[in-house]
Amino acid sequence: MDVTVPLDSYKLAAQAIQIADEYMLALIECQAIRIGSPDGQLFGLVDEAGNEVNSLIDADPAIIEAFEWLSQRGQAEMVPEQHGECILLNIAPEIHYCNAHYLMWTKFKESGGIDEALRNVVAFHTEK
Image 1 (cartoon, helix red, strand yellow):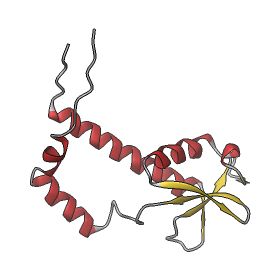
Image 2 (cartoon, rainbow, N blue to C red; image 1 turned 90 degrees about the vertical axis):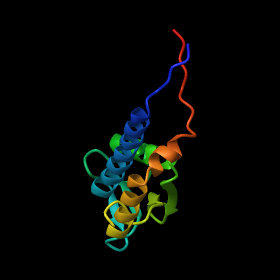
Image 3 (cartoon, rainbow, N blue to C red; image 1 turned 135 degrees about the vertical axis):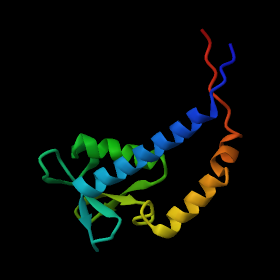
Image 4 (tube, helix red, strand yellow; image 1 turned 135 degrees about the horizontal axis):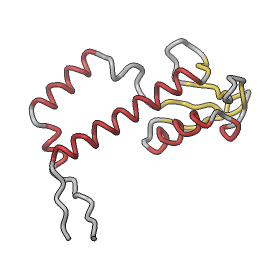
């Protein structure tokens, strides 16, 4: 059976992924220890009690989940530092809140750019 998914479902999926990206990023920024400058993208690891740890395996499970999500999306990587493993975020700081990027996104969205980009996406087919 061929299942056709309405385009609105693609918009919802894209929005859900964006929300997940932002949540996982915020989790790292709020729970891990920022190393270096206040706007730096390098973070030390902590456990559930907030104690510093040297390895991802010992980190808070929420941080592990956030790192795994972001690394699969190409937005984070694990790097060695003098005191152990650290998370390096591979994103521009504050990109979701930058006015210039927001205006570019709004123009793209209003011009039908999302619909055009998602037109090439093939829906997942299921059989009953």
